[in-house]
Image (spheres, rainbow, N blue to C red):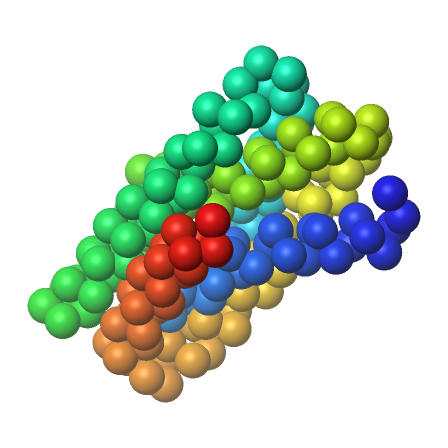
Length: 182
């Protein structure tokens, strides 16, 4: 696999995480470097780990994992998107710690990286260097996600609760896209 192909895969896999990072920025309205690094690390680590897990599972459970991964991602993203919309309409401010804590970020990181699991399975069949590919995918996702938090915060500060509603809609649309494109 060439570097150009790997870069295209990494950017493609990063887009879901980037979209959610932008939504997190909407909710924060003022992003700090620490917030950006937190989101980037969650998504980057998950996107790097999933190809490794997929590679390891390739021979045993590939069909079973691929059959349900999109439904899991759909459920998690829909629930979180719906919660964002409800919170924005009610006017409740989410605590920064809650928004970026393990309970909020881990499910998002897993949901957005399930497609990377499938890539890891593919890499096994291609006999590619999965460790190098996973590291590159993780680093790309980290950078794009960290930047997404700042981009979302800039827009969120101007739009207020409307940005959170938009973020929730984006998450739900992303969930629907995952199921439809399957």
